[in-house]
Image (cartoon, rainbow over all chains, first blue to last red; front, side, top):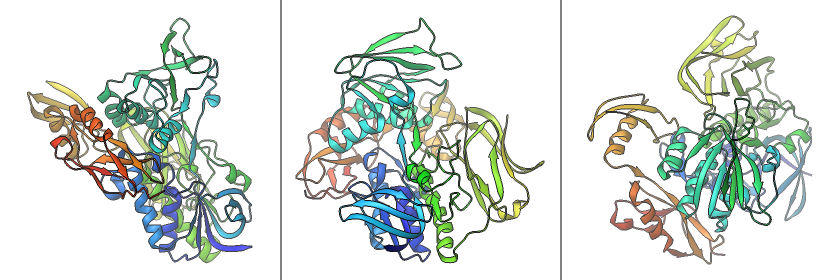
Length: 411
Length: 120
């Protein structure tokens, strides 16, 4: 059986950044396994600009952002096996994969999970109606248009105001389609305000909040959708139905970390993020198995994925070199307004970065990180949106090593 | 006149309130950095946007190479620029950074490839 120091599952932004940083920390024997024909992950189809502002101080397209990391990994001679699908990860860090060379069996000292996320589909949100062609998730439509040169439709309704949905509204308009509107079930947009502005308002595409698609009609091809207003419990209001003739419905209704391999390896799930529970080293509940990027929690910006994967590499390199990491006995929790909190555990003896999102839009609130009665950090926020990840970095000397942490939002 | 803007210069997307007099910004608030003022100043004079799309590639390992503009162009030039880009057909190989159209429509902006496409 092949032996390596680190196997990285996924050659997208998280996997590439982790690989490069591991090498920089002196880990020589690294192998990236990538399912697609080329590394780069989802960025290969995200041709719009806006990537890299935090990281590089300039605004790049997705392919350009990815290629900076792909090139660096190549310069460092980090092997990346493409067309290789990982089938199983065991709790003792054996990785089984199917590749053009046949079945691979690798024993790793550390396994790094960087599989990213996948889109919620029509099935996941149970829209009633027929099952015609013409219903796509936003990412699938993006892949058809930007990678395969296949236009998906002419008259388009978009359900969900996630960033990819809004970006596809603009993209399809530029390609000559008529986008009738973006319908969002929540009373606020789920993507970033700048995308409402530059993807919808710029092209006079209406955004309907508190609306949802309640029926899909058409036999072979989509013919129309019925849209209804929803009440404060997100239930459709009878009598508000309106039919829109269209040939395409694009769904941008959320992303879910892709963790089948993670659960096979025996890692515990965090019900808030739908990713694994990790500690401040990005180690899952299985020693030596680490996770970062969208497989851990869905990010708003790729720049933060890269940073998180680099922070993971710190812990993973220490694990490979020292055989274990310090225990993390303290829990980190959020109150009812805090969601998608990472990490779930920390040591209280080292610096830690806490990432989370607020559950609904808030104005003029304070975020408090508490240990017992003591507020160890207070951050004032004039505006906080669920679309944006919030990060708070704490220094070891601020922390009490004997008390659990709680993140509270005070309005 | 008071007008509200959502800044698009970075993902923070600041809500900006600006007091305007014709094409002049009298006062501005809500922006967390100086780029917010630049944005509003440009926005009331002549809104500028970048666009991204793809061009066909003959004989490439992929059918398309993605492209973007090196600098934003006036908003009302977006569709004319798209039409210019649609006319282009490249032959593989294409290198990331290749200038696909120099000074598109005579504007101070080039169309560049953002993806390397090798020969099939």
